[in-house]
Image (cartoon, rainbow, N blue to C red; front, side):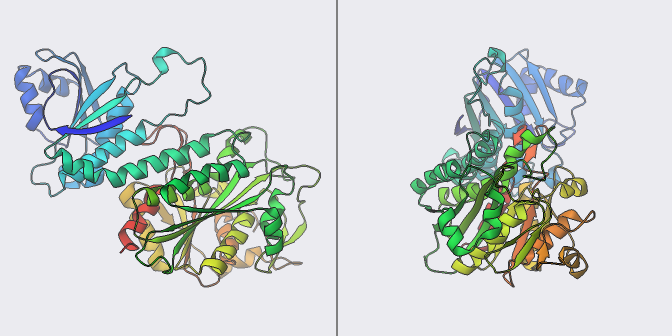
Length: 497
């Protein structure tokens, strides 16, 4: 979709969308339009019970007295709550309504609340980001789609007093939007197309942005002693990979980096502890954590972030053939710690164990954050809109929480402690990979923590948020790219300079 910035004027024709906060009176562009239509706009909004509540939309077709094909009035919520991020609602709501409407172009006008201190150019950039993110489609394999189901909206013009300033402000959000689309594509691809080696191939596209890419195969992983990660993939014909990405954007390219690690199970049958058939197709998105990490690297490189960042993805397919790992097996991790594998469907933590150990040994990062579609238990605990946060460092946890709140990718910190850690002690090995019936997401985090030493660390369980069952805000139904925006904000707000 083409996005550009124009002077903030009411167009003579076409489709117009106006975003406005809650108010009893029409102001600005809406007041002008109401006068031209002799009060019909106000009457239409009153008839629709429009209050300006966030994401409320009233659509008026061919409004009398105007040459517009349609007018959308979109609520942005309370004026006192308006922030730069709020403007995204205008872009996402307009595109959601217009994408397959038959309209080819639209003009979006944002009315800032009276007295607002929000920078108009930055707000306009967020309108553009909302439009871009909500326009995402994955139609690669469609061949018989009805004409009325195909996207028609190809151009969005955003009205602003200073188009040049808005265009400049758009550079960062545009890089993030492109990165989210890249990650959504990876998560949405079918598992016969996207497997570990293909994931690495897609990652190499980031070299054009300046990201250093390295892939470690099974032979080298065996030498490194990565028995936990290799055990997960030993039942698959697809070779397991460890993807290493480096972005060196700090003034000192050798300065201590920060690190992000992703679980990349490109398809998870559960292995010998096989999952039920119903819903197993959804396990193509069990690499959502790895997709978020590669998406983050894409965003940081795309906007030339001034930070040194490491991205590592453990990429594997969990299949149940005659060579597959068995319940009851004991494997030795890269750390030297042994693991009794009681459930081969609790494989993500095995992947992260070796990936995190490799990360801290080689790169000595300031901190590590891992992302994984790890447990069904977190979906039961927090639902499908909030991800679980586990951490050994309060400052890191607070910064992650703040970044998530600012970007609409919320986190909720969960408890950890010795009482939970005891639940993964094994009678025959250093630990077992499941903790029992209760506290499943917590015992999974306790397991991972055993492989981070005293490095500041956080674990984000995104099992509930990596895939949207229905469209919401700037996220269509399907792959969300959850984690990219909040981690990009984390880096931008705290670790660049």
